[in-house]
Length: 189
Image 1 (cartoon, rainbow, N blue to C red):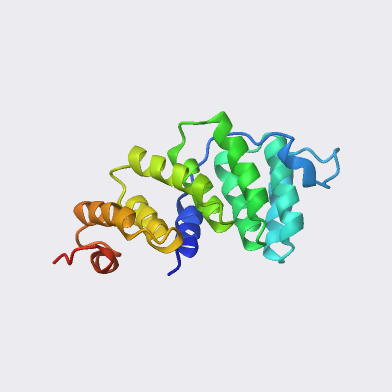
Image 2 (image 1 turned 90 degrees about the vertical axis):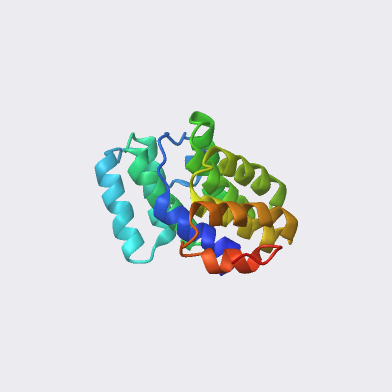
């Protein structure tokens, strides 16, 4: 599985964000200003997402955040529709605003790194992913994901090796153990 897809699967399944998105990110919002009930905005966003109108869903979710909706619930919904519609730069905008308000949120930093990787901004991705790997050093999935980033995106087997070895130390029988062993520079049993 290519790194980007692994990041997305992890990101969309495990994102727990705790910040508000500012109005600067809502620039694409065409939702009527009078419609400011967060729960109604989220419901409308869900309806549009279910019917495949991802742009409208994105606009409603962004408006819901601006109106005070619970960001832990809505930001992941917003990121899902941004990613599904390949609006990676808008997703990055939303994540970066949230990360600026909560700079200690390592999971959110991981999402930022994954999104930067998707657009080929490898320097930004690397900085965020390495920091996340240090901060969440007991999370084998993070270690494996960072290893795949080094291996696949940076084509750096030496850099990838340390993350695959850490994954194997944390989860020797984990879901990705076989791939981590195969990707290690020295054959591991």
